[in-house]
Length: 293
Image (cartoon, rainbow, N blue to C red):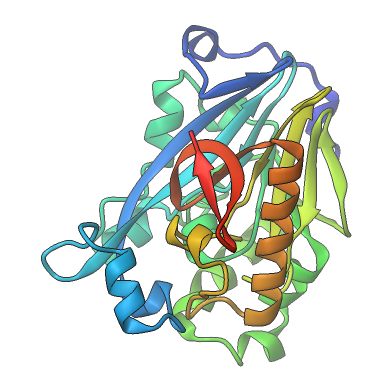
């Protein structure tokens, strides 16, 4: 497959008119909301003591006792390229789950961006809420676009022996979407840390899934990191040892999370995550962390 990043497209007019969430040199970062979805607390926090969890989530639960988490894709633009990190749940899955999500395309459209304006798609990991938006059913949503995924993550979600050990609710989307992309010769399987475009790096951060990755980007001393699902909720800053039902490797999840947060605190990086609203810097706080915005 030819590399579409060889081209130098003009940025869509809408992006030029839109205020990004922040800028680092000539890198502009836009948060694309895919919506939000309710989760049971024991799904997000499978090992948290009930009393501590109740206190930590006080005032945040709906009338059914569920925790609503945002879905946030990122659009990173440079003078020559547009890179999308994760694609949300997709409209079909959002309808099947009956949740107010699957709105990534609407978010792009508000910036004047269509699927054909995207040069690179990054898959942080292959859970349904991150890859469902990569197809419209029969066809790839982003045709003729390089879709980057880490090698261990690709194997995890395409090897039938591995898929057979995972819940059907997690594997169905991968079984549909990833072969569709591969059949269209759109998949770029990479190994380890790689530079995606100038100033933007894919960094392995395993634990949540076997090949889960984060994305680091910046210019000079200005740095930021998109943690993807290395953290699922802001309360995991206070309790980084609390993991979820879908953290495939719990011990590695905790080690990866604390390592990333320690590094962000040391470097004063801007931090954002797929399921956490807000952008801020990480500070160590009483054995845990907090985000100052």
